[in-house]
Picture 1 (spheres, rainbow, N blue to C red):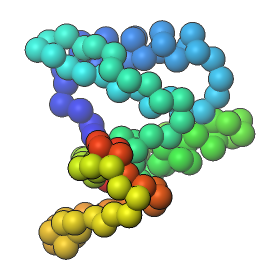
Picture 2 (cartoon, one colour):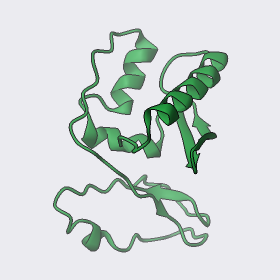
Picture 3 (cartoon, rainbow, N blue to C red):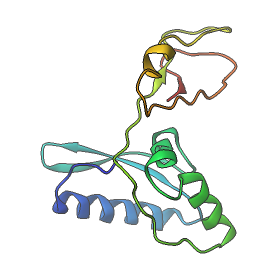
Length: 133
C-alpha cells in the first residue's frame, strides 16, 4: 500500500468499488479487493468488515481499518487519512488440516527490523486457512 497503478486504473477501481458498496448499503469498512490483469481492473472479493488484507493500515497510516470501521458505524467524524509509509503484508496459510498446530518461520520474519506478526489465534487449521499475517 499504496498500489502502484496508474491514475486510469485507480479511477476504474474506485468507480467499481463505489458502485458495489453503494448498492450494499450499511455502514463501516468494506474490504474490497481488486485484481490488475494487464491494464484491466477486475473485482476480486468483498468483505463487509475489517479484513486481514487491510492489516497494513496498522503500520502505514494514522487511522487503521479498525478505527475507521468504528468511526463509520458510530457516526463519528473521519479526519484526513495520512499515509506514513509504503506497507505490505503476507498471509500465513495453513498447509493442512490439524486440531493442534504451530507456526514456523517467525524467527526469520522478525529479523526484519520493521516486521510485525499478527497471529489470529484460530483453534484449528484447514488447508489454506488464513492463520495470520
